[in-house]
Amino acid sequence: GLVQVSGQAQIVGDDKSFDLSATVVGNGELTVSSPISGDYNATVSGSLNGYSGALRLTGFRVNMTANQANFSGPVSLEAKRVTTSALNALGVGKVSVVRDGGLYLSSNLSADLDYDFGTLSLSNRTLSGDLSVQRSLRIQGQGGVVSSAMIMQDGSELRLEQTGQVRFDGPITLNGQTEWHGFDNGSLRTTGQIFADAPDTQINRLGPAGNFLIQSSVYIPAGNRLAILSNDQLDGFVIAGSTKGLTGAGTLRTSALSLANGAFVRPDTNADPLTVTGGVNFGASTALQLELAGDRLGLYGWFMAQGDIVLDPSAELQVSLSPGFAPTSDDVFMILRGQSITGTFGNASQELTANDYRFDVHYFADRVELTNARLVPEPGSLLLIGGMGLLIGSRRRRLRP
Figure 1 (tube, rainbow, N blue to C red):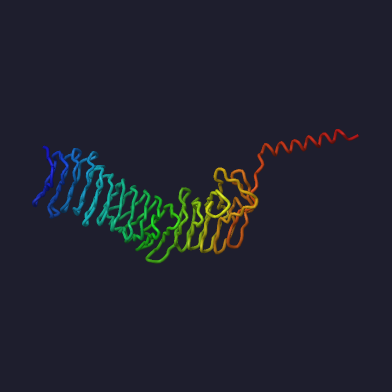
Figure 2: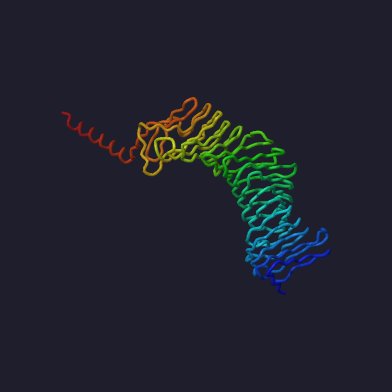
């Protein structure tokens, strides 16, 4: 049949299960409320694709079984357990999870979710869309994948209450200090970029250390800080993989940073350095990547550690010049500073070539500098000079008596 919703309407189950199988149209506010008893369900198997109003899901258990790809109205998810079994079961508009609401996936789901306080159970499924955590997100079930871009507001928390691993593949934006609670059975792994989008951001991992595996790139803009804590104490941090790195011009607060398996550090062009408060270990095949756009601070990026810096022999210094910049032999670029520096970059123990210029590389006890920039002669000009020398020599031999 057809249900016309023009104002506020409510469909309630009184101690029995029911199925809203009709097509819903209109632009009002529809509330679907299941019985409070967990023995009964409310099911929405009908189409909302012709409906442009708001939808509230309340009660205990509501099943959303149809694909609502053309429904873009706002959804308020307040029921204790809302089960979805279609990719767009909640439509394509904003879904607000409030009042301890619970979302349980029995199929992959695409939805823009705004969690005030509620539960997400992935059950080995994939959640895509945008995900915002205002206060608390409890993750239950048997693990799964969150490919959504996630924003965590200041004071928000993640609570891992699932068995198995949840993998966050999308970017994670931190708008302040956050807590990540881990328990014995579940774990969380991040692979997307972590963006510190406020002056004072924090990830405080509470619980067993094995619950959290952060395999993310980190971007910290100038003026911002990101602290990595474990049980309220500054902790070490590892960035590994050729596509992973630490970038920006802000400060990473950590007891130690280890770079491994091709990871990189890439400071933004800024007068302030990209800074790590602890020591830094550039491991095998890692790199410090810089761009020079001028001969003074603020026109090139540089990196500083407040602890000791160790350079593996296979670590590289990778420098490029901005278009139009021509360094001179008098220019001095301080590119790396630490409490102490041990080792040298494998490709730049004494000299380094960047674009058409060759630099001298100087290693001091607490810093590394590039100096004495000069143009590298074209290979063809070297051959020409060499050929002219041979020609002059042969002529001289002919003129001898």
